[in-house]
Image (cartoon, rainbow, N blue to C red; front, side, top):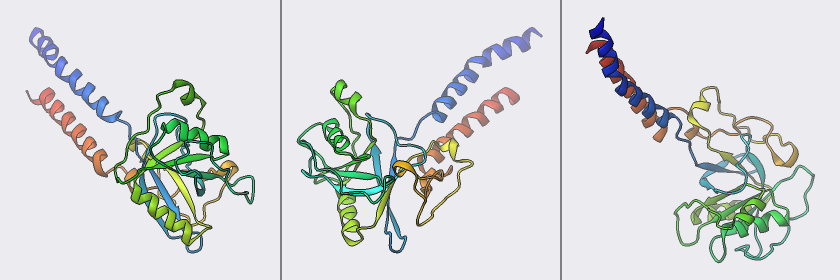
Length: 239
């Protein structure tokens, strides 16, 4: 009896360590997002990687559907033009803004003040994705619309799409946590139903494949967690 008790106590630290590591791996959030551009005349879509900002609200789980409008002036360092007249009150507009010349928060705030529902800032002479940060706390607290960052090539392609098909629209899709994808199924309707302020009525609109369980870094984290627990059980049962 004494031996068994000492044996369990000696194994206690590894078990706590395994549990701690596993929790850290499972709780690592995904910070990516996705922009899906859809041609309205034929339903063909194209996806672009994006990074959400570290200020303002996050994208709703349902996503945000709207029409893309280039900001004027392009860098949005001064107040920008309002979006075009909407066909209905449910139409959402998303501003496409050029990087540099002023803080990210200033750009997004100007888009918000002009009446846009979200902002997309694109890189210049670079394909790198950067996380937009805010330095001025007062301005950060004033931002009430979500914002994303994309590469220059993505912005170029988005401009081409909307030049070719002026009725095209985009869907801003947040990256879901991998554990929340067990019961999520793809839903890629060509013409999803819109509700108030451009929010999609269905959950996970046109769900990206990256949101599935066994994919990319999430697959590696899941495999590593599984291996850790197998080793822990082996130590407990066989040693």
